[in-house]
Amino acid sequence: MSGWSRRTVLALAAGFALPASAEAQAVLVPPRGSPLRAALLDAFRAPVSARIGGPVEFEVSALRVLGPWAYVSARPRRPGGAPIDWAATPFAEAMRADAMSDLTLGLLRRSGGVWRVVETAIGPTDVAWIDWIARHRAPRAVFSDE
Image 1 (cartoon, rainbow, N blue to C red):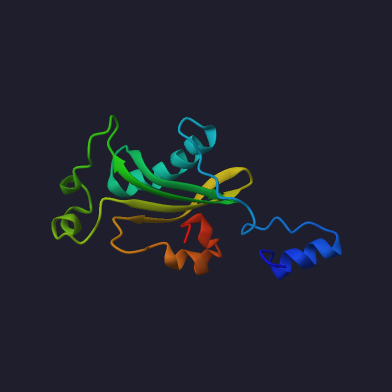
Image 2: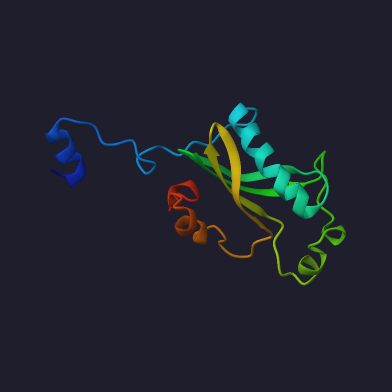
């Protein structure tokens, strides 16, 4: 049985395939220009724009989808790619004090065919998503390969 998990052997012996759980599915990274990527970033844009103030685009660091879950890690930019002037936002003091990053993180979930933002973190300085796993029962793999 070398290289085969006990679960795999039992499933094959029973004559059926492993269930298609979120953990068994592959993580999808939607490519630039894809409708899925646009839908995810459009859904994420609304709460980020509201909290920062004004329209934003994203410089995406990570965009991962696993089943009904999606994770976004991105730097917000003004339309056309200009950096955010954090001094002109509600986050001015935190940025001035070096108490935040320029990242935004989001957890989204598809429901009824629509992507909805479940959590956001503006300017995290630690691994903000670690609590989201237990709070929302989101699969760890949507956040990281580790």
